[in-house]
Amino acid sequence: MKKYSRMLLLAVLAVTVVLAGCTSSSKPTEEKPSEDQETEKKDELVLAFNNEPDAGFDPITGWGRYGSPLFQSTLLKRNDDLEIVHDLATDYEVSEDGKTWTVQLRDDVQFSDGEPLTADDVVFTFEKAAASGSVVDLNALEKVEAIDETTVEFTLEEPQSTFVNNLVATGIVPEHAYDENYAENPIGSGPFKMIQWDRGQQLIVEVNENYYDKKSEFNKLTFLFLNEDAAFAAAQAGKVDFAYIPPAFSQKEVPGMKLEVLETVDNRGIVFPYVPSGEETEEGYPIGNDVTADPAIRHAINIAVDREALIDGVLEGYGTPAYTSADELPWWNPETVIEDGDLEGAEEILEEAGWIMNEKSGVREKNGLKAEFELYYLADDEIRQSLSIAVADMLKPLGIQVNVEGGSWDVLGQKMASQPVLMGWGSHDPHELYNIYSANNAGVEFFNTGYYKNEKVDEYFEKALRATSEEEAIEYWKKAQWDGETGLSGKGDAPWAWLVNINHLYLVKEGLDIGDQRIHVHGHAWPSTDNLVDWKWES
Image 1: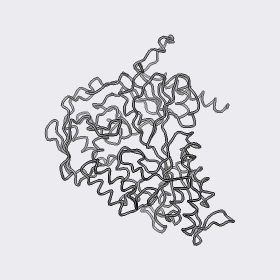
Image 2: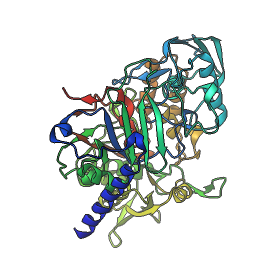
Image 3: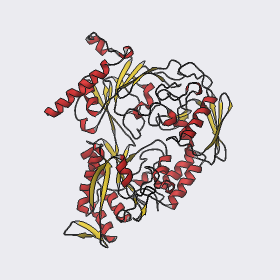
């Protein structure tokens, strides 16, 4: 208890120093407010976030893909039902062959510096992003042209239904004000404009007076970049209006704050090496694992794991069982749900496949091969560590020996092709399914690390990408997960054992309404900013 109290005190002091270090634009009131002043609805908010965007605020390098880009607008966006609606665009059309996308723009948009946004800025943004080689995937883009000041035409090398997500996620930057310092001093046409960024400490933004759409009720927002202890301490001290917290802090009441529990597709699961051992990567790291290459092992693990027990034991009850990387999204196939916590069923699968229990060691064997492997997780992630240990304990009575190992991303990169790794994904873009399951991505970065391949699944992927509407594509995304006979889910090939979707937890000031939060994607805090303009004080 003394150790915790000391950490809490240090965290409070750290927060106080950050707030005291603000410039005059963010300097706190020197006089102690009266009780009436304290209850008055202020027009600024202070938010505690855990992850600062190290690369800055440039959409061309990926900023804004997991929440609101704040400073920039996008051509399209998703509403609270994840339906695609207009933003900068007033309309868009896709040609019959799916290769030409024509976008009509609003004619009343200005950047925060007062300059007009035109089709030339859109062309500049996408050409720059395509040439950058960043996380913005524009491999299918052949060219982008300005037909006139309010019309942009995108030509693709081949049809790609998920191209629409680039129009949703890529903020438009101004050609006239874009340089090597843009990420630190962004100018855009979004709902907010940057006032100050102190790396490692805070970001201060204000309402963009030139914004063409609904404006925020809060003139100023201050984002404090704090670790979990400091964020919780700031909430306890009444220094913040909104703070992310981990499940471990969820049972602690904070006066004047309420707990908001938000559903997510921020998932955690185990990706298995899908192929037998024997090959090596270009870097010389081993590929394949003879234990997890056996489908009986993967299927047994999928049904043996008790997902609800993981939620209760690791997440303090704040989560949902995971069965794919896209649970509850429009392209999710609910037929992928499997019965779990079934040790007897898992034992039958292993027995039928020839995995026999060695009563002396307690570990099953097949043709001299032990049912044993390492399970790696990111060492500084407490939830991943706890999930890994809990899964290992669940599988031990089954006769599968799991040796849990923590490591850095570099270590995981060396081991992930030959040993299972506990990973996390979650996106509003169905292309993520293609990224982590397509044979074309086997061994590419952190995508298909297990070298999974199913020709039928790849065929469905191809049809989903070539579809000329999202509705048509969704049917193929669903079939890729499970078509009644095969698929990428636990009912099919089971190249993953998905475990949980982690609820995102926030302490929110009493009386603050954060609107209808759409299902959150991977990553804590920034996904909550998708609807910042809707935040308000309750009447």
